[in-house]
Length: 453
Image 1 (cartoon, rainbow, N blue to C red):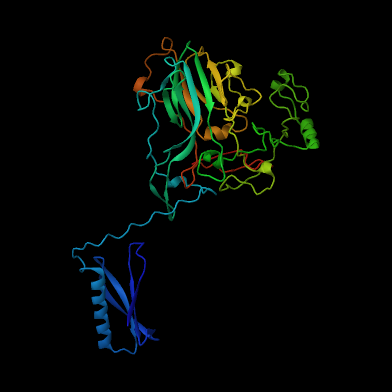
Image 2: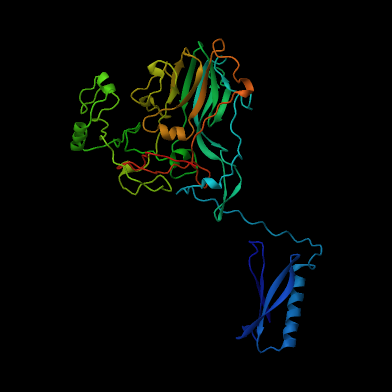
């Protein structure tokens, strides 16, 4: 009796093992192997025939010939002969890694110069937003999937292969407020806005950033899930958890005694660090020791803490955001200072300001554009999380033009391109990765340094 076993061909190779049995299918106790060349799906293979040592040579040859005939009948018309058999299946792609915990992607594994830079204006395919022609703009903060890394590449990374997908990012989308026409599609970085000196620009900012849902980690809000929002620092704290810079009274008093007033604090009328008042730092509300001890920390695979204290966990909830036009000379009410944040569901910071009464999760600012021409940029500015919101993608250029007074002869038109260099790290799914690298003592996710790749 002959029985045969064929192993999986998933790796592109096949082997066959022929086992010779006698009687009622009971294997012979002592065996010796023979190699027989057979044809398997039009490809030459080697089969191992195991026969009893007690079987004589003529019978062994007969068995080998029988085995070869059996394989010829089972698997086709002979090597090199035409066949209608289906091709061998391709190597199956590796299963994508789980979203959490994150695994950092080695920067050496990312193909260089494989994705084109976004270019706006005459040199690119997306025109800049003309604020002079559209003086009333709506800029909406959105979460989108954007091909930041080479999407679909199988990247050899060590001994593994990584297939990268689109990256979830936060973006600005710019539209004409009156007509609703999208002038600058949602993108990181934002499509550049070009304003003219002396022509004001009124911007309605709309916060539509979704919150992370742990029960659906790949759904809306993924960006908040992969970034470590630290609740223990002085930050927006829209849910008023009370975690921010919590410190025992005795320790606060000691910090106040060891602290000294800066010249700026003296000019702002702050005379007692232990009393709340008008100034940029009051230790009674947001205590800060004179010198925060530092401790090195290994990069973690995801934003999580082993502590059971809810304040030591990353924040998941309504996303606070506000927008600051960096370098602009504008009224303080429309500066987008850190406490002017607002959330999609209508929560607001203590310095929230707006023109008129826009809807929930909105604020309207006006930029007079009276200063000298120059390159400005707009970005999120929410208290304690600016680093994360900008890391997520909330940034874009704002050109202020004054053709009558600008120097002549410099590159312009298709020869003028804006460029920003921003450091990032990614995980093996192609998502943003922000590991704690040198954390501040007593704060689970606050870093003193970040080095991307």
